[in-house]
Length: 96
Image (cartoon, rainbow, N blue to C red):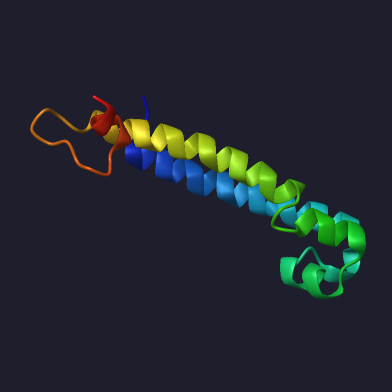
């Protein structure tokens, strides 16, 4: 199992990969904006706006990735707890 630190490093690496992908795809949809999210929001065409919208497919993809990583993070954090330390914010400790 990965440590908490390893998971945070992995999340950061995946965020950068996702960001580069996001910019490339937004650029393909409207090259005038350079793939910049704010420029797409203000001046981009409809396809680019739909793609970059916070409720759109690109952000849905990131939220799915983030949810999986956060679940693994919570599990890795819980492994560090023991009988004498059961924090209230740990949902796994509270279920036990």
